[in-house]
Length: 139
Image 1 (cartoon, rainbow, N blue to C red):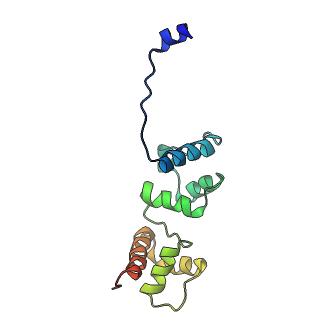
Image 2: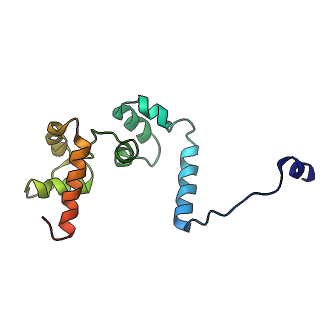
């Protein structure tokens, strides 16, 4: 050990002091994803991939579903044409904004959403805002 200490130097551990929930979340995610080395695309790879290619690659990871991949496309990669049709907020926003009696089914929303291409991310954002208004005083 003495030889190793001489080569490596003194311990430089500094506690991060993250809230335990955040620390555990990071550890669990890292553990789950690191077993699929090279499967999570790098940011540069994502820049060269289509939305569909990213969706296929990410949903191949255990525990990563369509919604999670869509949120990455929207909020991390800034992709402009993503409509998360399974998202409850998007569906509720559509129901409210278009005065529908019931929530649209994901396939119905996808068909309607074609008219918003290539700006479906902006449409989703507006539908989320509409759903948020339901929690307050509305419009």
